Amino acid sequence: MTSRQTAVLDLMAEGHGNAVIARTLSCSEHTVKNTIYDLMSRLQARNRAHAVAHGLRHGLI
Image (cartoon, rainbow, N blue to C red; front, side):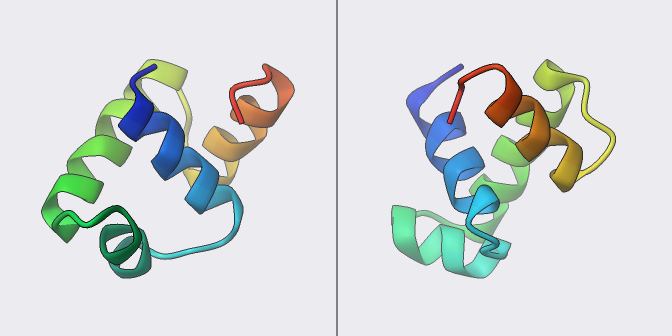
């Protein structure tokens, strides 16, 4: 995983929405949405909660 994907997953785990993640990482919401899309595909996750659970289970965050 890229450092941006890890950062987004970590912020998702804290319960933040796309707008807050974008402000925190100093990027656009569009970039966050694309990162989440790539992340979900890479982790084969069905939703955000599943992606976070997978990240926790496999020590990614």
